[in-house]
Length: 289
Image 1 (spheres, rainbow, N blue to C red):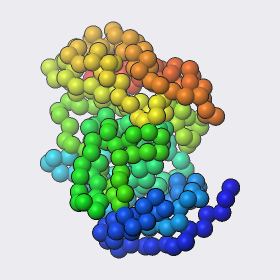
Image 2 (image 1 turned 30 degrees about the vertical axis):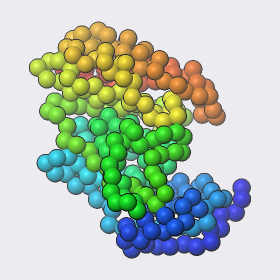
Image 3 (image 1 turned 45 degrees about the horizontal axis):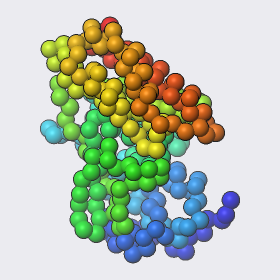
Image 4 (image 1 turned 90 degrees about the vertical axis):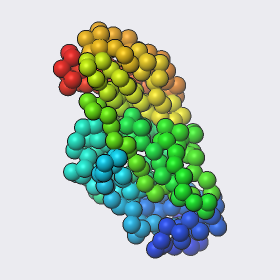
């Protein structure tokens, strides 16, 4: 592995300073937050480190409109947050439980997990299932992007030169909304072979909204929209009867690859199994199974 010897290191005091440096150095610059990805990958093209770890972006705040999570909130902050114990926000905390070792989770941040744009990242499926948006700051000011649209390929996002992710906003969920996150890895702390988040909103016994979001089975996290449509408008009893077909349809919407962690067909099979288990979990919690 080549040596990792950037030319300069900057510890910034303001978001504006970080944006200015990122714009100035472009692709030769890298953001350092927790460092659990950057200091392992050691990308040889990086010549400038912009350390944002001292910025005031480590917070989790719940208000009338929803939950705001600063990009520097660590995985352990999220796992232990009182603001994320209520349904369905608890699925965000749940997605951190099997991510690396306790020491790693003391440093790793939600912003890093998202901006690294790994197809197997554990946090994006739960956030996408809750219709979260990324709040971005750059040279031209602020902008918002639904997290579903944030990822454009493996290790690629919509972030432009000079931009950084400042916050994740999760809107207030409708009443009677529940969600579940499940993951399959080679070990409980390993990178996901497949992960899934499923969210249902139920009113008067009918599913009003459904989200099925799968990770590590396509170039980006994906919503299984055809499978979601099979659920919407259905009663709980009917969902219990068709959940096998829904899970199969969700798996058909995946586009997995084979790599050192798992072959493509295994991933597709596991996607079906995890989706079915997630739906069964939700049916039990809604009292429909």
